[in-house]
Length: 86
Image 1 (cartoon, rainbow, N blue to C red):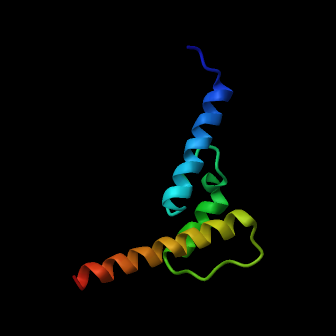
Image 2 (cartoon, rainbow, N blue to C red; image 1 turned 30 degrees about the vertical axis):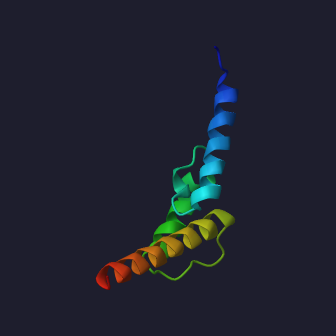
């Protein structure tokens, strides 16, 4: 069976979307062709993850990265708290 590159990309994107729906977006930055790979997203993610104040006058990629970083930091703190109290 032959498959085109565009069909393969479509299948990968559909599977990726299904995984995100099932498990959430916590590690969405690994998406193929996703804006999560942009430098602004990564800068926002680092700022959010490490508690830096959000930069002003930035784009949607930065904002999405910042929120993902905050979400990961919150999840890590919650996990650490639960491990210390089990």
